[in-house]
Image (cartoon, rainbow, N blue to C red):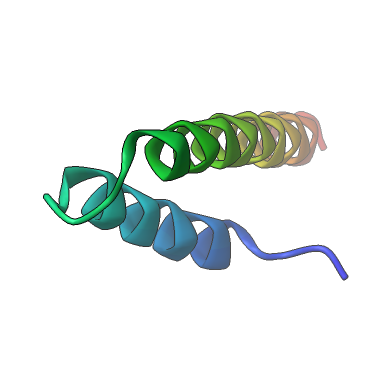
Length: 60
């Protein structure tokens, strides 16, 4: 199932909180960072797709 932009942003916010938490170890922080980077790429793709749709609607 593909997550919505809003769901991805929410997950990204949780990841940032965990990384900033003093209780999170280095290995877990690295894994969280990798997941966060993947989420950012997914968000960028969703935004690019939305921008394309808006551009096409503007041409009609």
